Image (spheres, rainbow, N blue to C red):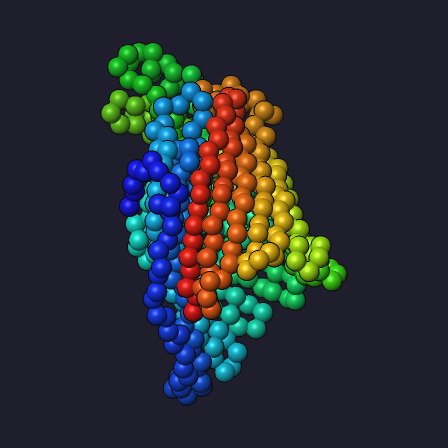
Length: 435
């Protein structure tokens, strides 16, 4: 639901919500296999947003790639208001007496269509679905590059940038104490930016044919593959009293095939030679929480990625939209892949004050596009989003038992590779009943 409003932020106030919630717990015998303990859990969540400058997201989150920049005709959408219950969750955990555990959790965020700026369709989406036994986990859950260490809690669903991506991946994971390693499905939001030029990859045979056929044209065909699982690892532990730290990494391979096909309705040279290339990208993510006093905590993250920038959260780089990030740039003149470097992090603090917690955080991620000469020569270079900055100021409190409320101001600032800039602010609100 969208409404155009021109008045007070009272339009965002969430009225009294009351909904009884019931935890379902029980045990049963699974034939001769033994006893199984079952526990249900979940939350009912109401979220809202009010756009102060432009429509840069939905009720769940804002996205840097939606921020209008100079020299664009985007409808700014000042005053847009959205409400949503799509992040409400239901989950089930089953523990067998022999030691294995199965967890399934779903929300109502619908199908992933790489267009997170749009309002979600309310369809059921699987968040977690995995089995654990001893040190092993098989199924879908958070990627090891994701962590809350070094971050503050935010009303915004995505929670900033400069740290590991907020995404769950199918995986096989082994954990030993504070260390974990996994083979994961590659990031579904990873993007290779296909740079376009006035002249693309072409063989001499094709060029000669085009010169004789004035009604024909040439079209570049690209095939991007991630034919191997990503390798991830993480270490997290308390280093000292009041100090917790985490270090995580990812290694992922990207390959491509490029050919320019002469077309006149259909591909007339199906056997045209292909240009193939591949890169192995990696990313490193660090975070730490430091207790300054009994009521004040400092939170810091940092990242560096080379060919794996898609594992950086909510940067909005690339050409797929809100969540897409460029791991590499494909030069269609040569078929060569160029890895994209990303650097950034975040710093924040939380302060227990009054009935709740006051939080503030600044986060930033920047891609190094200047060093890729092939991209700078392309006709699409200026449109690429090069830098994203996101800042939050929020307050969380508990108005009742198992009830959490939060209000937040979020500010977004972006810069394209061509030098165009943009910024926008929004107010977020959340009320959650947890059971």
